[in-house]
Each structure stands twice: as structure tokens, then as C-alpha cells.
Length: 454
Image 1: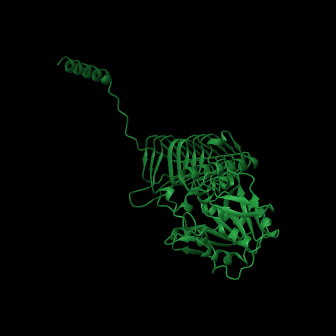
Image 2: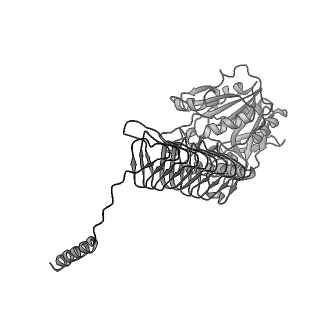
Image 3: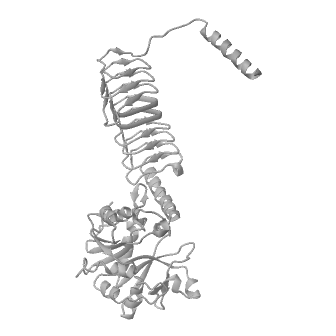
């Protein structure tokens, strides 16, 4: 994405909210969307917008949030005294800064770079403050934007403090604003807490700026979906639906076929090649890269995997971290691959686990095969050579190597290396006792009859 000329722009991200409605030990801004903490979505968008000076306001003791936003600096709001008080904590970090300052919320992860650039352009058009407004289907408890006789923004009133006439308006405050850095902290320093919640509201800087004779303006967002603020699990689900819709549309625009788009879940970093076909009910966790002309059949789960051109995966396959699926490989139903390389043309078609292993080019692994990679203390590798054939229901006890072109008979347990082009079989010799089955059935039937009579 092309970066914009926003080098003299800083952002204060408010991330000190406790998120009590989430009912979670995890800080609200770290709840994931498409496999990524929501605050990292926002930081990624700011980077795409060309803004690289970001200060994150956290609550006291939120070390995990500081880690998640690094290398961006953090400041701590020790007491929860309101959004105005939170923004004021960044004053030292931005001392003497005379550019634009965006103020955003870490739990507003869906805003686009286009909207951010539009808001900055609106502020630069002769205004001290530009506020992003929107018209939600249910204005509810959103603060209302009050428009003056001159058509500019006169003030922002919180719903708790609004009159019935003000609540009748549907143009609402998103909480996102762009402010002239030369006046921001002076305005914040003058904010009072004479309101229903006895908090220092960020929104009060608008009326203060107007009283100083400065201009404040509104930019109205195109739609409410990018301004979903995540304060509850229901909000999180709504935001996930929005970001999944974006990811699916982007994938299809780039040349992938999603047979049931609404059932496919992508991660923020999923990479799909051209002419990829994805069946219904497929989940991509983080770290998946898919080459061209790949087919992923229904009900697969993929994470931390690489799939090369022409491969076919599934249905009902699971690729775990470290799965490296080569060109034209076949991974079939109820197959699990973990930390293993399947080289070009290899086939693992049925009911099989391959972990900590290499499967050589053109090798075939039969149904029910297991690489026994864990001995209770450590993981060990299995190496299956080029063109080898592993019969069904085989246990390969690692560490073990199957040579190129070797054949392992069905039902074997292999704990020693197998030489190239040899046959290894460990099954017991077959015995046959003629008439045994008939005698057995007669005996059991007689015992059952006596038991019933008793």
C-alpha cells in the first residue's frame, strides 16, 4: 500500500480502558481479530497511512499491551479519569510538536487509511480540530455532534448529558479526531470534569477551542462499519464479521475462488496465489502461504503452513505449524501434518499423522500410518526417502529413516532404519484354524441360551 505524506503527524492511541464488559483477563485491545490483536490492526493501518510516530496510553501494569505495541512508546494512565485525562498523559512525549495529532482508540481496529487521510485533510483546511462523525443505525449512547449556525462543529455532548432535543440528532461522535498539535495540550489542560460521570472528557476540547475563536469541523464517515468500537464480545463478533468480509473480497479480487465465501475464515496475513480454489468451511489461522493452482477442499484447518503450486489438500485435513507442502502433493482426508516437509508429488491420502518428518518426492504413505515422533521427553524425526511406499496401518518409531524406493509392508512397526529399495515387514505370521469360527459361534450361542433360561 502506498504511504502518504504524513511525516509531521503523530497519533495518540488510547488503550487504557479496562474492558470490563469483555469479562476477560486479557486486556480488551489484545483480543484478536483475524488472528491478530485488534490494536495491531490499528497500528498497521497507521503505518500504511505513513504515520510512524505513535504513542500508546495504557493502564497501570499493562505490560502485555506495551509488548504488543512495541517499538511504539507507551505512557501510563495511573488513574481512570476519562479520555481527556488519558490523552494528556502523552504531553511529555509530544512536547513542542507542531504537526497534526490524531487521537484514536485501540479498540477501534477497523478504520481505513482512506478515512484517516480524509480526516487529516479536513483538519488542515483551516481548522484547529476535525472530528470524525458517523450515523449509526442506533445512536443510543453515542455522543452527539452539535452543528453551529455557521455549519461547523460547535460542540460534542455525551449522551448522558444531552437534552432530549440533542439526543434526537443522529450524527454521532466516533471518538476519533485530528487536532493542531500547537494547541492540543493547552486545550486538554483546561478540560474540567463537571459532568454526569465526573470525568475529563476529550470531547470538551471542541467547545474550548470554539470559545478561543478557533474553527472546528466534521468529517462524516461513509458508513458505520469501520467505526465499530469493540467493548463487548458481541462487538468483537461484529468486528470479526467486517474484517472477514474485507479479507474474502480481497482474496477473490486477487484471483482466488471461494466456493462458500461466508464459511471461509482468513487470517490477517493469509497469502493466496492465483487460481486457488477453497471449499466451504476452511479456516486459515496465522502464517499460511498458498501457491498458485492449489485446491483446498472443505473442512480443513491450516496454520503456519506453506503450500506449493498445484497441491491438493483435504477434505478434513489439518496442517499445523511447520507443514511444508511441496508442488503437486496430495494431502487427503483426516490427515494431520506438523513440522514436516512433503516433497514434490508425495501422497498422504488417508487417516494419517506425519509429524517432525520428511516425506521424499513421489513417496506414498498409506492409510492409518503414524510417525511416532514423541517419546515422552523429546521429539524425533522420521525421514521417508524418495519414491518410498509405506503400507497402511504402519507405525514409524522415530528416529528412523526409510531409504529411497523402500517398501514397508502394511501393519508393520518400524523402529530401525530401512535400506533403500528393500522390503521391511514386522507383522506376525498368519495362522489358520479350519472350522474354528463355526465352533466358536455354536459355543457362544449355547451359553447365551442357558443364561436367558436361567
